[in-house]
Length: 392
Image (cartoon, rainbow, N blue to C red; front, side, top):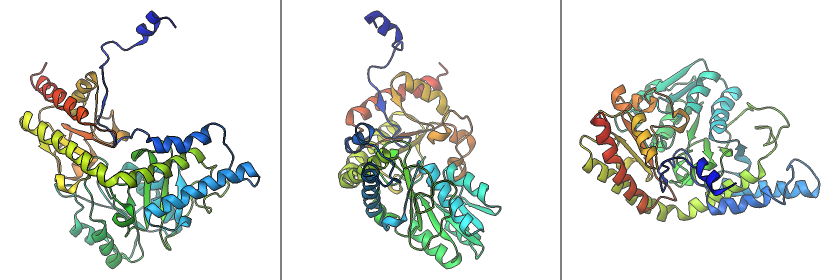
């Protein structure tokens, strides 16, 4: 293609630099994950279910990854079920547990739709608990809806929109006392990049993760099944994953996920401190520069990468358009709901009025975030808000 042709295909007025502040939607792939995947995308291949040498090599890679993921989640290797991502892991946790032992489901109004929709799809008795103004589960309401009929309780460890870390140990203790026949599931998709799941999710019977939230590839995840928790299949076929999830293994993705989880675990302390400092500078700077800007939830109760702000009088969708023009990537909430004009169900569950929910922006930082990214956001966001408030 000629230089003039390439120039014609380039977007007009494209920003000189992209500032990526949407790590909660997906993260760039870590070098460790890329290196682990590359052999299985080039010269190596094989179906792990076979018996010949090529298949056995693939099976070894899957088994090694299973051991790694199990160790970092604090469960036995036999408890790891590889899936296509966090959505399937949540569906398998809720639906699989209910297929094994039917009954009522208890969850919160701020769960990912993969949990909320699965609960409605697999149970006729779904009990939903609200949150307080900081996004913490209402423990009194939770206690009130737990009883002997409950078979699944699902409370996410870290909220995907506002980043609040739930007191899973307290939730587990309450479930054990008031719903002794229930299994406790936690959607830890947003937690794996920031928390040590060996301790943070130690009280959960079922744990969902998704590789692309901590520097792994998209399209692969896992459900960790602890102890005697029963999970019946919701996908049928060849009986892979100990009859719990059929389908040919994504060997490259599984290897990449394990490598990314190792890298995230090894760098967690340093990365958390670095990213938290960037997040605090971003939040404090925007609040100082933009009148009436408000932070959603208590910062101390969030993971390091979450900066969720409300700009009264500004529609989040309109602000995102202006930020996009300047090369700043952010979100109005869950990536699965982006483009929708409906107010966030998470924010409504916290008691926010629709107008406040519709003026909210999630800036989510991660392992690639730099000081220059924060500088750019602080330079771009305040005038964009001012422009919208002025009606121009």
